[in-house]
Image (tube, rainbow, N blue to C red; front, side):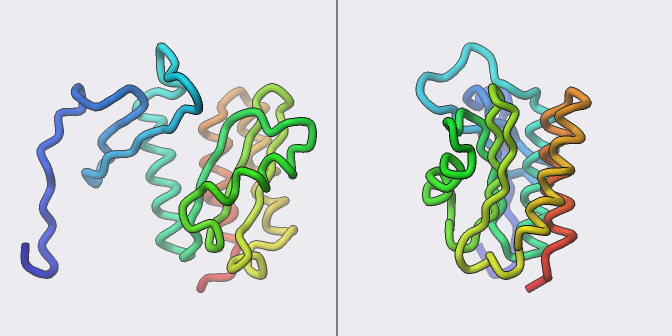
Length: 157
């Protein structure tokens, strides 16, 4: 392949594993499930595509590696999110939006290298955006809103 060429693989979406989808740009986006895979994915394909697009756009615009975690964060949600942060890609340059569905806790935490840009004020804006969507009954919309609000509020590289 020569420099600058884009080669798209011909991927049949029906052959992808559960929780995976081909995005509009041709990338494969897949949800990771802790433990055993559920019988059905937690989100529809269009929701996964929209979430992936929001994460990719925010990362491209800010240089911060956005990640989302949905799962039990334990009795101390901040400590639980802090324990998850090292497992995300590029944790020092990451923004993690963690949601504990059972307790309805939402935590935004940032890696060491981006903490000056993603401060407590910006994190609170993201939490507020997420909660609005979650209260309306749409977890994915809340997460997308949080990603977009945080990306708009952080200082660009």
